[in-house]
Length: 154
Image (tube, rainbow, N blue to C red; front, side, top):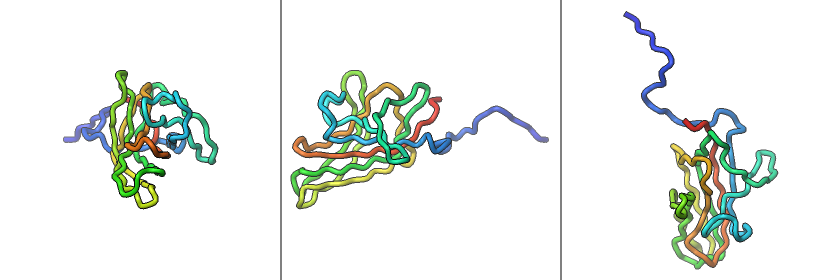
């Protein structure tokens, strides 16, 4: 006996992946962003880095899609030496921001810290909320890079 079933998705969700290279996205947040940039503290992921090296302002997540964050790295300088430095991704939630991801680094004697955090299954973010990056040292400068891709919101 052979049974044919068509039109059904497998029970397991599987791994999400970008459908085409243009779905890949790299965003940057930096402490040199202008004040009033939409984040209560920290800096917005406002700079879109294109594959050809050019930079544009990030216009936000397109309607009907989600951004899957797959990796974030940050570099902080001017922090106190030999300290734990926390870098966090914060998502706007209507009443402020919620920390959704944290990377930890230890600063060196020169007051520099760096960390990289890969997210194998990805962290989905829907259109609308602001995405910010903050560190736990207010007297320092930082730069964060977010890697991910767009996919259809199901």
